Length: 404
Image (cartoon, rainbow, N blue to C red):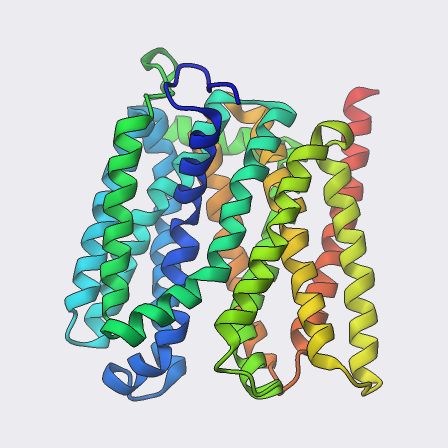
């Protein structure tokens, strides 16, 4: 593979490094899932729902950090912001590790999430600094291979660590991950934003950058669709463990099943990277969403008819949701970033903040709909995919109008 411009590492190593920076968020959330019962027994007397706040508060911190890490990287360069973010992330992991109460742990998790926003947001800006168009979409897709694998293997990693060393040792794993990522990034990546291209950190300039983004119809629609995609993902992450436990009585094997689904679905990102240059980003997203609507509608009908074989069909459906992620999220991010190369850091912040925070907020009440069956989750994915499909049609019309 060719070397990214201005860099000394290979394209493959660059993709791997950017993917691990993307995956900081997923690893820090999903590895905690198997530990929730133990956390509940030790410091969360109100039960697993209270223990799950260790994931929610991390997302709160990450959402807050996402708003300003991009503008900071536009003003001071990409590398200093990544260094700062990883240092804060490591500090949050240490404080979570030694926290004596749930309240102090939640405060530490907010800090950890705040730091995790640095590598997550700046990695997207770095990719945009070095690539554009369908080449950028291809790079994004390849990073998504690892991004999709992490939610699958993280619960298994968390379970193995908790069984061997206790649940608090998971935070030690986060610390080790942050330190290794810091060393790898510092040694192998050169600054991608020259001083001449930096934008001073001024509120009017930041507001103008946001205005530019939302004035662009294609960018605006891409952010809205990406928000729906993340709402689907967060809904799956929130409800999948209770579904395995309550609906199918497979709590013990959940990490293995979920890991197998995530690993096998990673092929979609490889497929996307191979064919995006031929078919284009918008077309692949539209096709994937249309297929998801049909499959989810058929599965809802199957459950309403009370037909058998629900577990194998649920596994197939879950694999389809993860497979769709590889054909949509990277392309949508590339579509939104493409016209915003001159404000890549700010654009990455706005895209990440809006899609993550709103997507998470929309997903939060979905978990309350759980009735002991997968139907609420499947119906949520069906409706969200249908809405996203409509927005993609508006995007097609907007592109056609721009080229007319």
